[in-house]
Image (cartoon, rainbow, N blue to C red; front, side, top):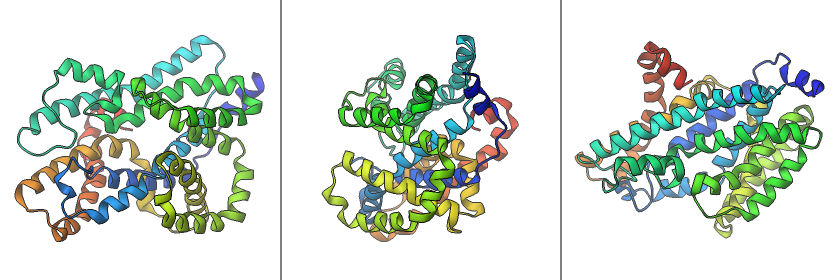
Length: 344
């Protein structure tokens, strides 16, 4: 136990390549949140967009979960006793569950109010407020705030994985094996987001193992990274032959290696743009859907969404989804210690 504690508590430098990966991943999240097939009038004239979203959803959450696992293990501190674990849990409630709850309630209220005037995706006013809040906590994927499910599942991982790491520290590959079993047997039930918990457990565990053997991993991807990038790109031609779960596993692993290689050894991701997105990942994640929904709702009211109109406004919608949350963070939330900490 002492050896593990010393390992986890040593001073560590920031791994900026992880910020780059987070920045790229959150950009994909924003693009994916613009519209939903069958729910948004933006489906008019957006065939190209939904093809892009189809490809993005093949790998972006496995990538996000893997980098989250890397960051978790890199920053993890072992516990001396159960009291340490309790303190840790309370900090994660403040860090992950509190933003999930506050933003979830704001989205529920906002959709009820704004949804009466403009189109809002995933909105119904037939459910009581109490039932909506209960659904948010018990079945987040069925709630009006389901876009926040990542924080919910991440909180569950932050509760479970510290105990698994202490139990299997010298055999962390066991977590990958367990992840594969959960991936194959994952339930379709959305209670406590178990579907997402089981599905992405494997990728979080992969991130942990990558970070434990990080030096060896970097040698591996430096040698074979280009091969994985080429395979990753070529494989999109055959995407239609994969079921969703097959695609998440195959494309997810290829993306983890390929994007990490680019972040480490290429200038394509190594710039201030992705560094900035990586720095503001939390506030972008919390607010992007809100600001884009308001903008697109107004857009739908004012303009007929033909092919040309949607294609013209697509870059602007992405820009708003990225930079409006950053501006809100810098110039509004920064005035409040609570809001600033909530969105860090």
